[in-house]
Image 1 (cartoon, rainbow, N blue to C red):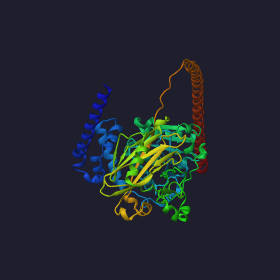
Image 2 (cartoon, rainbow, N blue to C red):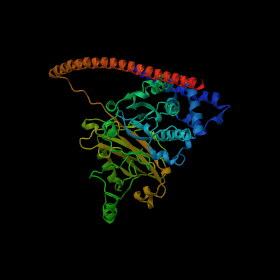
Image 3 (spheres, rainbow, N blue to C red):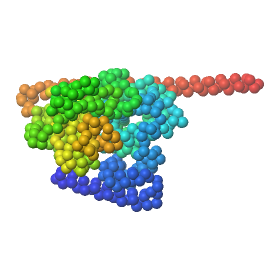
Image 4 (cartoon, helix red, strand yellow):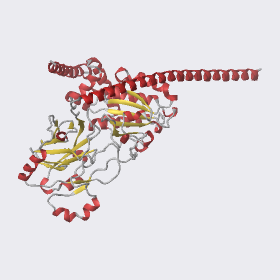
Length: 520
């Protein structure tokens, strides 16, 4: 019965997607096509996920979704979103570090940081600042389609001079209208009490569909949303990350560690070049692109072995690995699974399989990178795939490592026009970035099976339940006490405001008296 309802729901959604497209053509495109960028219109007609995003955000009301699409597409053309790049945005904006992507929350959502103290209201630069935010959002949307963001407003050391309500409203609209379903949470950290009134206005802008996503947190409370490894020291975290530009600090992917330990540095590689070429199990190592910090990261190429050996090795290597059930259709490679690799704590849940299928007529080079290279072993992490062939890649947890929703994998691929005369190391050094296909996979953590509960365990659980009830009672008392304190604080603030108003009235009256005395 549940499966039938789900099927009917999917059919209904498909009908609404088609209705949205047809009505957009007839009601919005017919007389005013110049209002939109043709690339956005084309994407609307082809990308089901885009239309579903607007429909879901507007609770499947087609009329509301169409209005949202119209407003969003007009904004995209006005700001030239499809053509935004680093050269268009003033360099000083990147250098300030006021806005950037880095790290993940506990649910695995990317963090979008706003350092409020670094923002100063300035009408001359507001347009560039808005484009700067659009640049980051569009960049992320292309890299992680369909993946939500957690926005963090770091209010430390900020004051009224840093609050630009027009800019804040623009950011709200970005998630409310321009990028539907993008917002996971919006966390306001360490907000000074003097800004309470301003953020009450912000709440009214969010609307009912997003108001539940707004969270206010102190330095201690923020740790319930973001782990210590991604929190800066001033929030009580242990993240050593320090913003610098260039490069853009949003690529956390690194090369997986090899089975025999960390990959050697470039200097060691060059000094042992002759020795490496003589070994059958190595091709070469070469620099990866710089990630968060300018540092050297080398790739270890897998050996080119005979076809028979490959088949035997692949069979034993993939045994016990979780098989993918979905597929992403890429321009160079089909990638299975389409979105996520699944891992659990059981021995049979520590390995997952990535299948790459070459859909071109040429050989395609590929490499796999991860945000947690110390946790995973990827084999092969770099090689090539013949035209029409497939390659099985086994990703396994190393030692006692545990998978996390924050972990990500990046599959990179590029077509090799002259495969016979090219080594992979040299090829990756020379291939233009524009010709590299990228596809990201997130990590899904499987829930462990619940063990059978014995009578002893039952008594322990009952004891735990009793303790939990006592804890809940104490917590409720503390919350009630906190509520009373908050009410008293609000009363004090109100009295303070009244006193300030009275002082201002007295000052005005004194000035008037002085003026009357002077004229007389």
